Amino acid sequence: MLINGKNLKTAEASTKISFAANIVLLILKFFGGFWGGSKALIADCLNSFLDLLANSAVLIGLNVARRPADADHQYGHGNADVIAASLVAIIIFATGLYIGFDSIHTIIDKNYKPPRYWATGVAIFTIALKSILYRYTKIIGVRTKSPAVLANAYDHKSDVYASSGALVGIVCAQIGYPILDPIGGIWVGFFIVRSGVNLIRDNIHTLMSGAPDRELIDKVTLTACEIEKVRGVVTTRMRTLGAKLIVDIEIFVDKNLSVGEGHRIAHLVRDSLLAKYDDIIEVMVHVEPKPD
Image 1 (cartoon, helix red, strand yellow):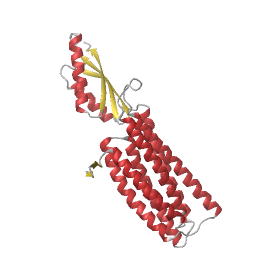
Image 2 (tube, rainbow, N blue to C red):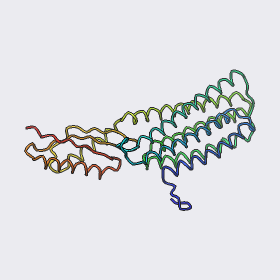
Image 3 (cartoon, helix red, strand yellow):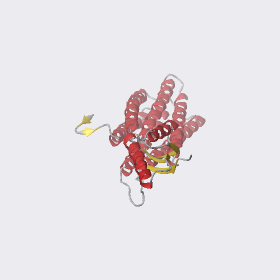
């Protein structure tokens, strides 16, 4: 999809669109929260501000991740994408904590009053826009397999839940239960914290060179076994590098083969895996003689 010659299906494009949308929401929530008198919407305004910081981190991470391998980073800079996603997760988590504690403090002080109807409209618009952004960004994140873009997508999803809670609190406060507005703020905080914890957990797995799903490892093993003169696979180990994968595989060959022939078979395995799996960027093949 092209608009004014620009492809909207890239990780960078989705992040820039999210950035622009968060600027609009930040302005609307600011006026909706302060002029509309909604504690929950003010909390959501802070959330949009931190979303802008998160979008900036994602853009930087995506740009660094595209850099080619060099002497200091011989497998490339793919984990910059994951680091950006981790920063997004930390920002999400910290935002949720602040919103929750601030709302609790409001309830303790009994410093609440019914919001105006302007706040209701802003909350509804936020839910609609964030729902669209979540679906769009998730599609791009899955297609590009970018941890940072996927983190951005789930940030949008948490915002939908958060704004829904804010809307419920605002409406209930307007019909005579003003305490439900800061309670809506607590609801916002809860979902944001939960989203942050899930993202932090997933990114730690990647940064610690976690393995992909067992199903993919089994497929890679089967592909290697299909190569001519491969007599079996001893072990297959895989680790993540950002959105990509590195494979370390040990194969059996006939013990009577020459070193040169074993080397040729290893290259066949490597080339086959690189050709069949787009996510694999490096394969190390170890050759072992098949025991009697």
